[in-house]
Length: 274
Image (tube, rainbow, N blue to C red; front, side):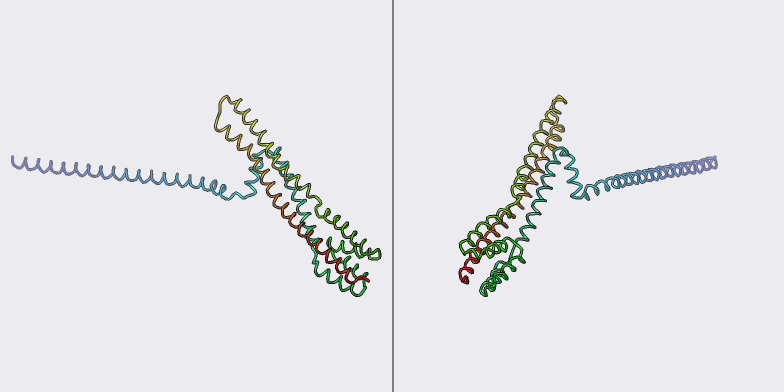
């Protein structure tokens, strides 16, 4: 009987040990499976995040790398070609006139002291033809005024002075040529901008009326498009105004040269005239 109990005890112990081993193995397997699943889920999440980052990166890079011309083009289209084109034409024509005036005024600049020195040397020796030739070969309104005076030396100093004064007024008018048109474009650019803004606001209110309620999206979009024309118009006016003031300053400088040079020129003729 004792042997039977011993055998049964050994069999029970072996069975219990085997059952514990199977349970432990199942737990280990379940834990490993859960770890693998968690790892796979983390990997999938990482891949998804990476893919999202890769998709978002080009868009962000594209937004970041937009050039000034691309942004300007987009704003131009948003403002409406019908209202932005007149503003652009004001800038083009205004800048064309500005460049023409700047080139003309730079070419009209003369070294008055050097010219007066050459004229004095020729007049002192009685060589009026040499003085006239010097004026012909020198560009600028000052040299032209001096030439007109020298050309009338045979008529007396009084007529020379009248010729210098009269021709000085002609040269001043030439210096101020096209300034009126530049001023016109300075005034037109913001005027077209304001007109486009008013029309855009009317269109925005029409959209609100059609929608039946005041939607922030409708109002904001319409107002943004309307105000773009004013912004561009003011920018064009500011640019042209800066160059306009520069041209005025240049003209004033040349006029001062003409007046001072004319006084010195008459003093030379009075001094050496026989």
